[in-house]
Length: 211
Length: 211
DNA sequence: GTATGTGAAACCGTTCACAGCA
DNA sequence: TGCTGTGAACGGTTTCACATAC
Image: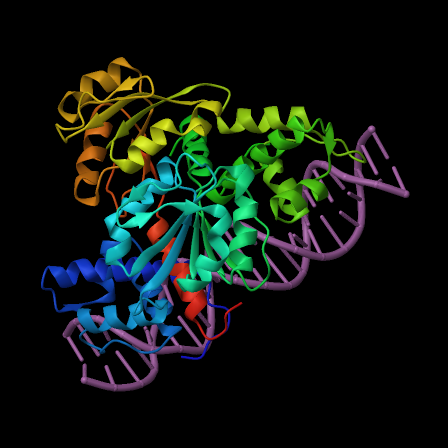
């Protein structure tokens, strides 16, 4: 159960397992084996068991895992048994789409603030939020107890957005801008970068051995 | 120069190098060493040299790489020296945002069609495209020579979108729906899944050893 | 002198295979 | 018997270190 060096990719898979366990639970499935869950998630059964072993023993030999129980345990490991307060920086097309995306709320992530530089957008209402000036962000982020920042500004503004968020005490950032951002060691940035993925597709449809 | 088993992650890094080489080129930089480029990209210098070695020798010992030349070579390797025709499936908030995202066009990806099931959205004009019925997709995808599909529908519809795209001859898909999709072996799917990334952030801000 | 290209070593994550337990 | 939990083997990527070339 004790652990050093749990790879990020294992955490990503735990999130995947949780997602699929929730689906099984919705279907009324009570138990699942690593083999079946692995099949659903597209991974190796031993992989699932190894990933879980980082954190404890959650199964019953000869039987498998109780869906509800394992789901709860994984959600707990991931820190999903709390509501996370998010601030959005950049309310353009993508930002607005993220604000409206219902799947965030369901999973315990709540936008409590949305900030913009463009005066034309300030004051807009999206969902139950009013877009506010980027200049006023710092105190509001503290006041609203924002823990995670979501950056949906264009590349040239992304670093400034990070700096301000960090300044305001945020130390987790989801970045949609296609740039390498700098931050202190205790701040975590996850990049969502579909430009890179498109290029991978381009390569695969181009390369001699397409497979 | 010949090669088996080039890892996906190496391809992703090539895309990253290309992006940063383009920035250097814009700044008028003519030459760059693997050390400097590595610093910019946040990777190890040997990593860059190894990645490039899969495809050839592009540098000059004692000097480094000519920025323009290396950029061209990488773009060529990735298949970016052509225009790719994209079809969007699902013109909700996210889909519309993607259509409007200028960065796609700049890099040689062009949306030539946008498709929807929701009658309320059919007929809308976004940019220079008119949203068309999902039912009419197959012939139009063929006619417009679509090579890549972008899926921005909600999860329950994503598999159907894949099936229709594949049926119409598309074999590269960028998927934004948070589900595992099935497809033939010769079709490539890249997933963009920020739900998983948010959970990684949640974990990192929750786990005992936050670092 | 300087920086690339590359075999070799180190590292890390995945998979196997089986002991342990219900 | 069946499936988990896990040490050990495996495979692949990353990094090192140096010969090579400018």
